[in-house]
Image (cartoon, rainbow, N blue to C red; front, side, top):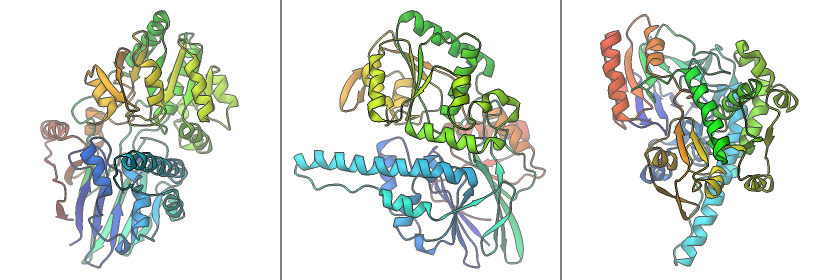
Length: 469
């Protein structure tokens, strides 16, 4: 029988990776994500792959986020020469994300090597280079939603809209082995049904094996309208306090949603700040990709979608005080604003990017406000702040966390517990269910909920587990 190996995002949120091997010799890698969070987890990114990349027939990718795609250039550098199957929009977003990731790898290695040289230690090499990323991008093979294609002999794949970010997919694999066909469905990251720009996740009904994410398996998100009201209150309070508002954000998905919400409040006359800065070259580029794939967005929010149409003209109509800062020099001018600014900057978990420079200028100021709009993995700077750290290390300096910290629970791009249960309930039979992409205690809570509400037993695999499909 065909085999499925659980290689990443097992009892943790990041590092998505699964290997499918058939008796006929086909090998398909599902996801090739980067570990993010605690140092020991990130060090795992440098470990050799648990398989020979040169023997793979294909890679199938659910979406562009780095925890699903970030090791693809390393895979190519290690000898993989085959296709990377993905949706059309994912292919475009992946170019933004992996070229940026490669630049960060090179800069971080250069910086670390300088520090090591002063200590008499040998230099370090980047995890991968821009050349590796460019080679990998040449191996992209795009497909439309609901278009079935053969990834390898005996392995048919179909993408369905997951509603998480633009281009995100639920992956269905029909695997023929020993004259039988078995269906594996991987949820990818399922979207929050309340997200303003994305359609809801596609409901599927048939599977033999189901891999389902569990990032928010322990709880539902806060009421959506209540979260918008909370954001409006934070903005008003920051205005009264005379400070800036910092919003660390993922460049793809989260940044576009935040522009929508801020534009909505602006249209309602409830955004008192003087300027909203989108301080992320990747997010600026992602806006253009969203513009090219408008037909995949939720048409019920036509006014907001219009804001992403063909350049900045209509975005400025939706949110006239939005200022996109592409260059480092433009980014530095934001430091002149001691109050009256909303600053959206990467990275989403505060582990790098321009948000760190804004922390340096604002985090220690009690009149400033920090809005955390989404999940923060263990070991990240964002998680430390959410957990109440009084000081944090930012750009080699220890900085006090005096700004008022707010965690908004309703703006997540992931499905909450009830939405996960609802999506799973559409399967007409009870496929063999494995929970992935979640911290262990959250998986355990979701497993209990699945048992109580759907009378469905869920498995929690261990890293490296291998099952017969």
